[in-house]
Image (cartoon, rainbow, N blue to C red):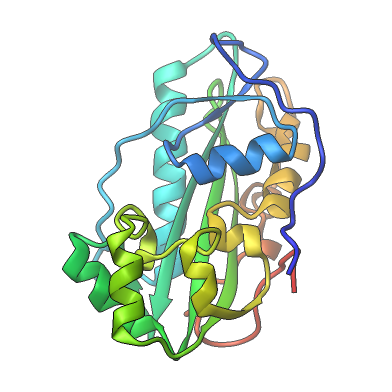
Length: 243
């Protein structure tokens, strides 16, 4: 299975540069994916409460968090100079329920016991906000992940590595949990934490977000063709770069 990364010549950023993208996330996986794609950026994490609101669908929840993270950092930056801020949120969904990051190793084991032997959805919402206008472009991508049945001892050994504790659903597909995954339907970079193809599409159209650009129509701003507000376990995967 191939990862949907694009080749590039990444450069490590050591100081603020107004030409750079700002990543509103401390996730090392997202940083790695952007570097692999040759994107220059700096990191400014956003601290946003990750609580599902009453009646909120999983995709709406992920989209709200991604937008809130990007917006919070964009408002801090302001303008001039204008910057582009990228926010993202990845969730694991099983039977319509959002499985967040485990509270502790016991909770991680509980999550993995629910996921193994079954198929679940992974949703990543991405939001790109311009700091001068606060206009936003968004995308939400859903992939489906099949996991084999795993013995409890296997899961305990995996949790003991410590890899589970900061991951939605308690696992990292790019790490030791790859041995539990039998198939990914859709974008693998989405499952890792940032759907690269869709993120690069948002960046390609980012000029419409800045001051002086004509006001983009709502369909373009929201990237509606990339989103689906229905429950992710229903229907086919959204646009993904890997099969």
